[in-house]
Image 1 (cartoon, rainbow, N blue to C red):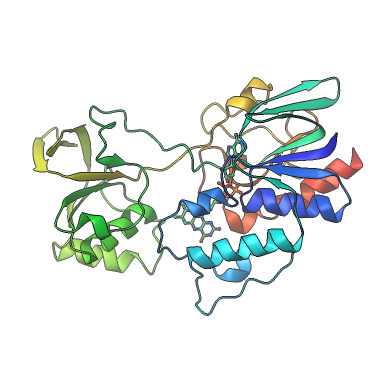
Image 2: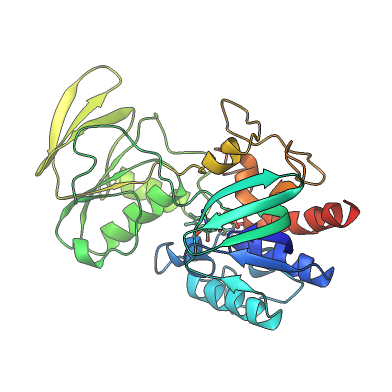
Length: 318
Ligand SMILES: Cc1cc2nc3c(=O)[nH]c(=O)nc-3n(C[C@H](O)[C@H](O)[C@H](O)COP(=O)(O)OP(=O)(O)OC[C@H]3O[C@@H](n4cnc5c(N)ncnc54)[C@H](O)[C@@H]3O)c2cc1C
């Protein structure tokens, strides 16, 4: 019997586990992949947008020689923190259901069953890409995740999206010899693009290095071309070898919904106390980016890492 089971070993889950351990609670983190699994799947050469101190958890300093640490530095840091606190992590184990009987939670995974007095869902959003829902989206040349540019040298690559991930992918692909087309359904790039990325992508668009279609949707992905349609209803086809559909991600709320957690129907934000992150199901908490539902630009590592302290404070009071 655990005092608290934390689902997900991202920054929010790890920081909650540290707070639980500091408070003397018997806890475990169950993670379906590796430690900080989402960050493991970020683009290989990426740098964080945040400066290192804003990514720290457990009060341990995160040092980097650069203003913005790299993904590799982030991975090393979170592993060292987990080692330092000797957190109990069950990695490569997936939680498949949670149910509550009397006041005890039964957590079922693909390997075992557990019981706990409280559960924290810190499952993030990165596993679930927003699907375009168009013909050809399942072709093997289409990916909703961008990793690195080298394989796409001299290839016709389409990047769909208009936010940071799309801008960064388009720039990297262009700089490594791909023929890049950026396609965005809105009339301009997102205002949320970081100030150090925006002038670069805008200038590459202006000079024609990254051919861009604004106010345009992809209607169909075919083996060797894409069918596009602009807001005026005009259609055209462009040659295409590979597609990166970087149109965002959303959290999987299935098991919270099955537990009776109420959601905002539009944003799928789980109903929770803003001070303790306890949902309407007593003893069931949410932590990290899942708290914002689909609005995953509202909660990220910088602020999601702070949820654990409030959650553990509430568990102790219960
Ligand atoms: C390219 C990129 C760059 C970013 N840069 C920054 C930045 O510079 N600064 C910043 O603050 N934020 C940044 N973010 C956002 C940030 O990464 C996320 O907000 C953050 O990872 C959310 O943390 P989390 O712990 O809530 O979720 P996650 O880190 O996504 O962790 C959730 C974990 O739950 C696990 N999980 C899911 N379902 C189950 C299950 N059923 N059973 C067991 N485990 C499960 C997942 O495998 C995952 O490891 C960036 C995001 C991207 C995509």
